[in-house]
Amino acid sequence: MLLQNKVVVVTGGSRGIGRAIALASAREGADVAINYWGDNDKSYGKASAVESIVAEIEALGRRAIAVEGNVAERDTGIELIARTVDAFGHVDVLSSNAGICPFHAFLDMPASVYETTVAVNLNGAFYVTQAAANQMKAQGTGGAIVATSSISALVGGGMQTHYTPTKAGVHSLMQSCAIALGPYGIRCNSVMPGTIATDLNADDLSDTDKRAYMEKRIPLGRLGAPDDVAQCVVFLASDRARYVTGASLLVDGGLFVNLQ
Ligand code: RM4
Image (cartoon, rainbow, N blue to C red; front, side, top):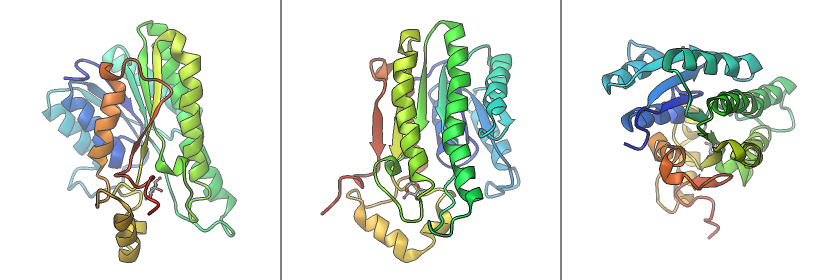
């Protein structure tokens, strides 16, 4: 078990990639604290997304708590870490995963769309990372922080002019935090998912031409699944990556390198 008896905090952990990270962590022996914001997703049957992920983790014999909060607000990260320590005694891993991508054209993009995307994706990552790192430093036993950046940190999207800079910022945040936190034994890395089929892009990929275009561009011939990313997060969070910090791992089926 790669995360036996570890305590893993996952922001945006009730759906999509975050949900997969929470489940993969539990399968590897971790107890999990899930942050979520809004629980109106009923695609998991009668239970809400949050109720179902907590139940799935407990069915694996691990403990789980769910803490609602908007990571864009600094106090959310502080509260999330405090609730985790109250419940499980310590924090070993942070998956800074929460993010939004409301596709929108650049020229008529309202300030609210831009500012909300920056607040959630970049400010949120900063605040939660800071809260988790302060707890890890106080514990004195190191830790691992894995941020969900994106292939979009490295390449652009015409409908993502607000979003791609935040993912580049998350990537850079991990590089600088690796330096700042290395003396405390806290490793900081990012994963860079390609096009992963989740509810984040369900509308965008409901365009069959867009979906076919993306699939054609991916050397492995398929869109990614959330667990494809989760397995890489578990690796970077585990002791197998004990000498890895400041790194980023593309999880994109070869999309980034595929020019022709
Ligand atoms: C990723 C990448 C994907 C998109 C998601 C929402 O960074 O741009 O293509 O579907 O974001």
